[in-house]
Length: 341
Image (cartoon, rainbow, N blue to C red; front, side, top):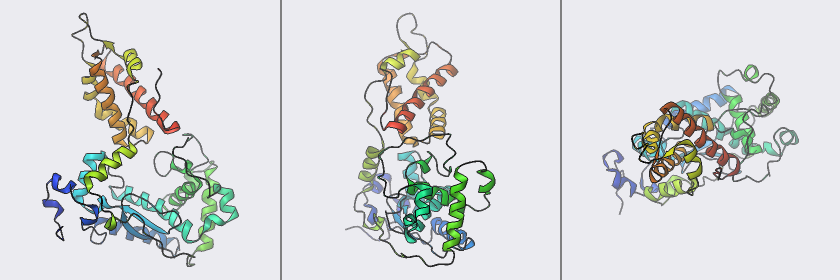
């Protein structure tokens, strides 16, 4: 029997990981998330949008397909859970006010699309594409394309017409942002102007659908945190085959009697791991824990191969960073890590 009103702050990590998500006793009220949601509603009021999506705690950031509601990750509702998320996943998605609001604006774009059934309009389809298009497992994006706005990382607007609209709406909604100036000369400006006209059309009008089903609600998720994180990492992270050898041997040298005094490659990679991780994650948009797992896998393989560095540290860091970036970008474009075997 799980006791009610558990004080998460007093639990050791082992006991915390053994709790079911539904037993965490979480609520948006009384947390910093409530302030973020109220700020979002003020932004919508300022634009004359009557509809305000209902927000609830879920297993991740989401707006269920066709449902005008917004799910917020449960771990954002308590500092202890945010700390745990940071430790296990290396990042806390939406863990700051500005980041949280960016994600709320994006998800609200979905919710408004569903609430007013905007995706049925011919002009919407002409601007963004067919809403019924199947969501791919992976997507190829064009980093320098000016046909899409850039709101969230990893060029998410290019993923699907629904995401393109949600990202465009989020940019349009962002306070004190001059999107006309910022996107001047971009094809994406036409989408922003369409959203501006579209929002004028629904201004002060009630939605067709006001309520939605709150799927994957945290209060109903019975999985324990330990298994939640095991599945989360397994779902998102790749089990990499040992195909790095040829490439690593081009960057480093195999240890022998003549070069035994050279710094080992594994130690060098670990020494600069944080810098490599931050830079690759920033420029590729990939999740930090995925990049980190890849870095540590490569460092481990360097140790197995007894590789040493015969070049300067700075050049070695550049070469290994380029190699790992290539792997991450291949994964982004094809869904698979590929090496030059």
